[in-house]
Image 1 (tube, rainbow, N blue to C red):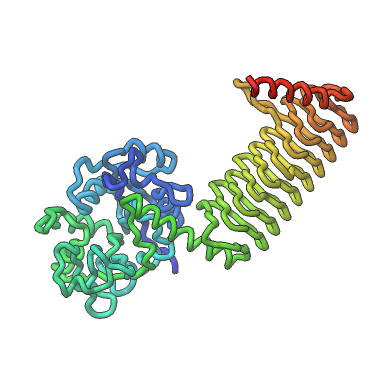
Image 2 (cartoon, helix red, strand yellow; image 1 turned 30 degrees about the horizontal axis):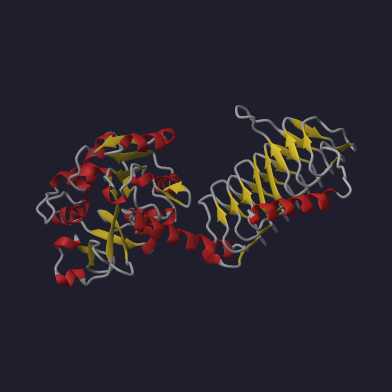
Length: 456
């Protein structure tokens, strides 16, 4: 499909108070897969290259404005909520000079797809010239959705809110998503004709269909997948939407060549990128900003965010990669290892119980169990540099800023505060002493003391 020739504007309604969320965060800013639901929608809209975007906001507008400030959307304010048609009326003045088609969408309905929106616009531009294209869907449970009553083909005979529907109309399973496409000139003409003679006393946007019908101009319906019309108004609905999104993404990942041993226990972020032949074990969580290259293995109970994992790498189990972590080809992070703003060079290993923060680890270096890069002095962060092929003995503390040269060895249990030259041995611990017979004498003295205190 191709976009119609006419320019496109989008009005997004985001003025709902979101009281059912019981949150200080605006409803449309609650995240799904680590990304605000409004940004899911705006990124989809951007695929259509609209000429104008208008965001209708109300309570909590400052939060929304801050989120979209860099995106160039025009902000309109709905001070009081009198229904969806009233909300559109608040946004329409921002498009006074606009002559083209308008899509009306909802900030709390983030899953509509660009292909579906293109289908709506293409249908609007069809030779039979429908007045309005509404997006319909058939949910598993139609519940309290407004119903779409079809006539011949895709022609809409009637649209009715659930509260105003008859029993026969409520039995219809085709539901209204609220989203629609129409010409700007038609919207300006018909919007003032909508009344509020209904059970809620509100101005309903779907009544545009009946206003157009009064002029003898037909509206049509395009049906999208049920998930595209999912609206989110409560924490429970947010959790359900997260689950739906994750299930779709898991299926997409597996179709693209990723092995998920227990798909239901793996959670992705919206921008997670994973290559082919990657194996992901159970209970792995991906936060935003993660890239996993081909052939990597992510073992169970690992948490990865803001990190890049190279080809053939191995992570975990029980590993944590924080923002700025970079694993180059064939490197390995083992159990209970944490990385932050650190690079692990090709073939390098940190297999056990290690913290690598603000560090640069060279190729084929080996980091022993219990190693810590001490990167923070309470005021500033400092870097640790470990050269190619270096060996860091277990239970070592590298106090940054410090450099361990290529091929150097740091003795186990060392607290290193000075640079270690390449191929040198760096060791910083007290000399071990042996006192013959001391342990036997200690036990005898302790037993005597204990015996005396017991008899007393």
